[in-house]
Image (tube, rainbow, N blue to C red; front, top):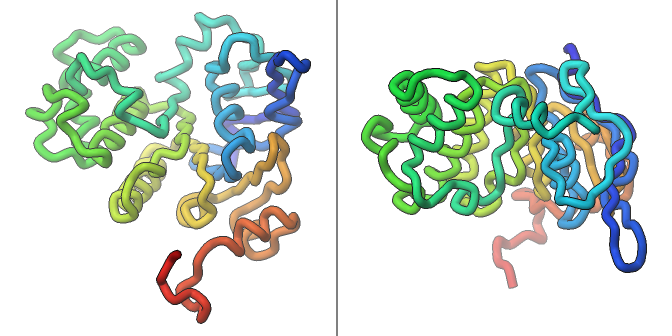
Length: 270
């Protein structure tokens, strides 16, 4: 497996009134082609900041050190114009809340078309055909007609499918999914996970899947990175991490997953 993304000793620091604070501390991992790395940890563990550093989307004032290489090219310190060319093309991101990520004033098909035209320079008619094909690929019914609908006219699961279509329309080498199923019910969540896994296998895209839920990670990841308070506490293959966790925090996360064969689990929550 050739390594698509190599992150080495990544540190993200924010200035505060009490001095600089490291929100990501020396994180290192790799993503291979046709590989899914799951990044898991509780809120505030640094998962999303790690992904935003990779995409070059950190808030103003943040400082970074270490190295992030995509296909051998260094991203840390790259010019904004170079990162803009990469985002949506060589690397894409699916955000947690599609309703706030999609523009409410434009039809969803047009929003996908704009991403495609920005990176491929095709005509509007050609981009329209590609956008409809992308919506069909993610399983949106009646894609040709519904491409002219607005974000509020879709369900939460459908909006997430639209975001996936937008992220994949230019066939990126790297896809980052930042808790894309958190706000969805369990049935729709399972559908989205299957869709992402199928699309990754079809395209050979490397993926980073970010979540607080180890049960979700177990169904999709080939490698797992566990983070706590900005630090990397465990990293290995999914089989290693789930079968023989080395860190107490990982064991605690695993023990928090309800088991159907647990006699103390009566299916009733307080």
